[in-house]
Length: 264
Ligand code: MF3
Ligand code: CO
Ligand code: CO
Image (cartoon, rainbow, N blue to C red; front, side, top):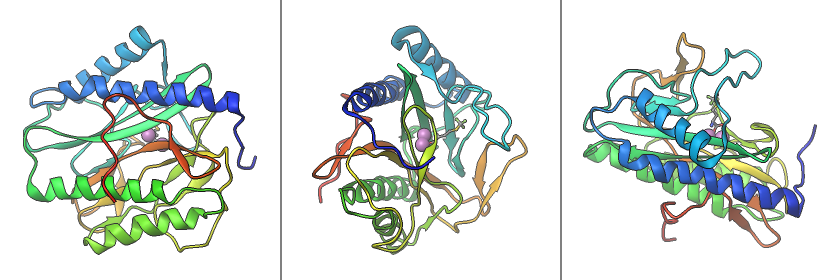
């Protein structure tokens, strides 16, 4: 199956799913504070999705080839956890940074977005990593237009991260999205300009760089999901779902609480 071009009808439903995913993040922000467990955050999000929005949490029981079914409704990745953190009974504490990654299904379409949250006051280093990762995501988004290449996205992300002394996780990438959670293409967060797939209007995919303060190496934990940095350095991630338009891009995972794009 190759890269799909979404129809105007598909796109309207993707906007709706994207907005709803982002609204879950708006809702959960106030609950991410010291003493709260990631299980409690998961439960609050689950109940909001199912009970208030009428959306389906896509992660719950998601089982791509080679993975056990994901046991929770959201991913919570704290400090040195790179991605796919499984909510549990550990309490958040002041100074933690946590990525909350939400994917909802509405009317058969997926919206996928994540943000970093500060628990109390982060260290200067942690704040810098989170901010640079946000800027990296946005540099990638701004590279999206018809006729550009996937390699252009990866290149701007990699260049900005490495200029700050940070490193890009290679093993996980952005992805096409629509009726399926993960579809073609793979959107690498590193690469060379003018390489890879050429972008066309109607493509929808995520941009979700995972950036480590230390070395790029990762390790998968025995739960089959949680990914951590090998050197235990901090890791950050932000994610939006985007559409290639006739003239550039449209971010689909937008809601009232979406952090504004950085100044160029
Ligand atoms: N939301 C993640 C992504 O951005 C995927 C999580 S898969 C799960 O692609 F099963 F862990 F939820
Ligand atoms: Co994603
Ligand atoms: Co996600």
